[in-house]
Length: 266
Length: 246
Image (tube, rainbow over all chains, first blue to last red; front, top):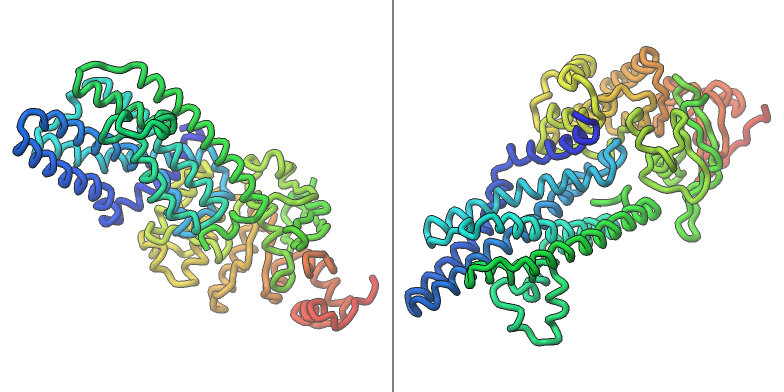
């Protein structure tokens, strides 16, 4: 194995060993997505029973929104929390003086984010299929493109959170849980962008997630694949990711100047 | 070529000078002591040598690599141990060692773990979570982690802090043995003057971020007219007595 991949695997192995030994952590991965699916699944069933056919499609978009939003959220948290685990265990001092490059650290966090996201979201997807007759895979291969875009958005936000934690320490820790929720109302997860006041729409369209959810509704309700929305999501993701990478590079350098790396986690 | 070269190193935080114009060098296979009271600048100097902290000015070279430009090449050939930096407590000792074996790209990592377990008497605790170990066991594990890549330069920040005399002596004996067998260069920051006298061929005394004296322990004892390094340390720390000019 090439040294770079070995270093990335080394850090991933550290987290996998942790999960193997900690069932509460494993349980937590799937707990919230499954709980959310239960709440929205029952809500959707209730609406369908009361309103009949029109509510069936509304229910489908609701459940699709829940599942796809979990992809973004779990990707972001998977990366942020893996970094925070290093901080909580006061291990960053060892990691940053090892030959692991900062971009390799980010790659390892991305790897953990994918694993955590899959472990969190797959049970919820199975639940939706088994109990609410909602099969997200019915969207077809385009679902993979939706997933990729949502994960990239999650990583960009997580990289921003990690950057702020590097610079400002534990004070920035709550952002790992809170930041993405702040973007949810503008991402048009459960309703179209047209519902939003006109002055908010430009901001909504600047979010890659908005384009994915608009695309998801088009696929579910009209059976069409909106390539324009997918292209916009990819382009915006590249901008968000570049911005987050720049922020990470700067904050990492600033932390090395200020000495924050020495005291991080204390 | 020296294994470690530190030239005119300074670190300022605004108006506060943590390290000011510090220079020293260590030849291959030497053990250099970095001494000083709390706040003297030892940890700051070590952090700069490891690339955790960017100096305000000055230059650091380790094994011929400029740490400002090429630190990752040097870091692969170095290692570090400090009782103030922990290993993940839920992972077993073996898992922790494997993690660092991968990070340092160690060939035959399982065999290396077995070697270190034998040499540092870790066999009985290899499969115990690191968080359940005693202070002495943790120190030995931290040392094993620091030796996983057979480092050519080893930076040790108070390696025997909080150890009982027996374990402390065992660690010192092992460090002497490792240095003589491997030719490793060791930089040792310590408050234990008996340890410094025993292990170090040369010491640099720091006070308020500046080098205030240097020499071999024997030289310093002679110049300060003292019988042990503890008194030399106190003379310097409390400005009690000036050294006799060499």
